[in-house]
Amino acid sequence: MNNKMKWIGALFLLVNGQWVWAATLPQGLVWETNDKDPQFASAKALPGGTFNMFVDSFPLTFRTVGPDSNGAFRSFILDNQLRLISFHPNTGNPIPSLATQWAIAPDNQTVYFKLDPRAKWSDGKPVTADDYTFGYEMMRSKHIKGPWFNNYYTTEVVAVEKIDTHTILVKAGNPKAKLDLLNTTELWPQPKHYYTLDENWVKKYNWAVVPTTGPYVMTEVKKGKSVTFSKQKAWWAQSDRYNQHRFNVDTIKVQVIRDRNIAFRHFLKGEFDSFEMLLPNWWHEKANTQEYKQGLVKKVMAMTDTKQGAQGLHLNIANPKLADINVRLGIQHALNIDKMIKTVLYGDYQRSTTFDSGFGAFTDVALPERTYDINKARDYFAKGGFDQAGPDGILQNGKGERLSLAITYATSEHTKRLTALKEEAKKAGLDLELNLVDGATGFKVMLEKKHEAAWLGWGGGGLYPQYWEFFHSDNANKPQTNNFFNVADKALDALIDAYGSEFDTDKRATLSQQIQQRIYDLAIFVPGAQLNYVRASAWRYVMLPEVPATKNSPDLLYWPMDGYPYSSGGLLWLDPKVEEETSKARDAGESLPSQDMVDKTYARS
Image (tube, rainbow, N blue to C red; front, side, top):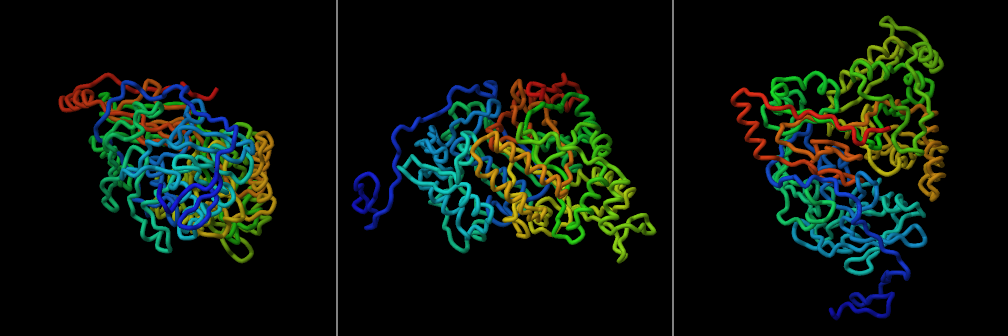
């Protein structure tokens, strides 16, 4: 044994001449694992090949915490980083990941995890308990400039302790029901051997390719143009029950194409292998070229039962005009969401009434729609001081200020949606100014709270709705937080605090509905649309299981990696024989049998 470290009794360690507390395992723990749930990948899957896809903007950083890190590309990195455990995408049960076993202490607040001794970082270093205790220190450090993480690892996760090299405990801030507790404590590790935690951390690691525990690693970066991921040879977790027949392709090349119309032309040329088609105009109108008619390209749609992230209009009430609730209520009734869904979205979507949906008893489905009503809108606007019609029909107040609302958005495909809303809003005396900004840059504008109103959708996921980051006053009037509303409401804070500390699931669901009611009453969010399917196009050699998506798949052919919190990705594979057949048919101008499909296995009843 190293003469600088030795055991003295059971509770203390002598380390470099200093006594330090050593966590120990309590008696009577019941260890759990899960090797019984069904596998959800296809045994027909073939390894190998390069999968080509695109994104509409290059990330502002490769960091997953700190300034500018909360962009869309973050998922490429985090979904390739395993957590202690994950959740089965069909049953919802916890399944092993970096931890092989877990045990919940009687306090319903502390979870013990046994790490897989085989686990390795992509640079060959072992994953140990030190990567978790360091990760806890890192997430609480001011050096990362991540206030959300600083808070979460102070209030929600209050301890991460090493018991031995492959055993740790994680303690939540308060007792929780089982699944909620596991979801709170199943953390990502941070490579202690790689990071230096100091005041230069943000700048030093802005473009760092950090070691990962998942199947892929970044192997080539062309700034502003592309990022290439390569499969690790002999990835340590490939044979694990829930990873078998997944993460099949050898290489994933992600190119930046800022215009989806240009990207679609590249797709039809065979330069991209798939094209996400959630947007109705693509599915109904544009997916009708010769490549589709010949069966060279297919359309696949799968019904899901996913928990929906919020999509709609976020009103920044730090703006003096929007600080008046009458103006906000007027906006609610001036936006004809139903007509936008019926026309622009072909009726494919459903109207939302809450911030997040699909969480069962946690969602207040009784909240009524604020329907498009010109008279109601004008009445509210008049109460807010905008009671005079200008020469162009837009309302003005006594100072001659026009009733306008600048909407910042970052998806060009949403222009038609917002244009439809703009035309209808004019009838209520409201002028919508549409400000399209580049994806990553636009989100930065929103994070800096420089928007008047932000039109965007948040990713779904999580076992329960999350409110603190979006609505608590701790995150109001601060940059780099997700409180895009800048709302600081004591009643809402009290409900969110109670929700965060409530153990009883039924009581917590009641609090969730009360939070949604308060958000509704404040009229700070205009709910948009929601959907319960995933769909995409792909060349016919891109293959999927017989049931092409899981119950909780957030994407279909677009996503070859893992997923959060459900382990649902990595199901696709490439068939070289079908690729050769497709190429020959294309060159000869011949048709092949259609592979189009609509799967309803997980359709909501």
